[in-house]
Image (cartoon, rainbow, N blue to C red; front, side, top):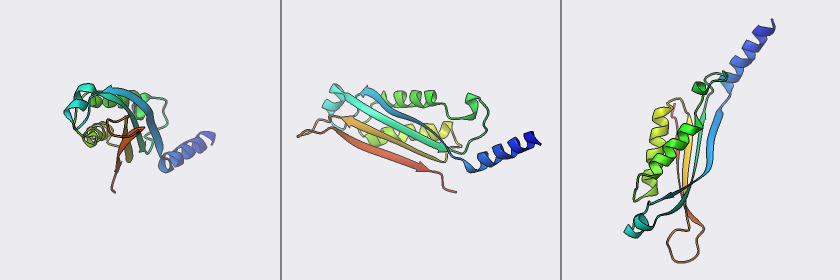
Length: 135
């Protein structure tokens, strides 16, 4: 009886939960920028990545979730690949995450460019790309 209750509870949770895995404030020095001097001088960027998905199981196994170490590897790899536009970097990160974890239902990735080379004092510029699985 007790095992049946636990099984029913787990099934109910699996069918009604949304799990989040996220990395916040991944600080990277990179050379993205539209202007040639940005690609020579480089600057610091801060990346946030969050994914939501229905839990596959509640097993205590890394294979049953999104591995945030792998998310970090994707971020670092794409930040090392110089692009003119941060929007391109966002797209490349999100495309790789969705390809690796096809079961995710939503994802959001953002990049802050710290102290961008512009007139005036700016803390950061910011771009974000959101993904939502259409049903």
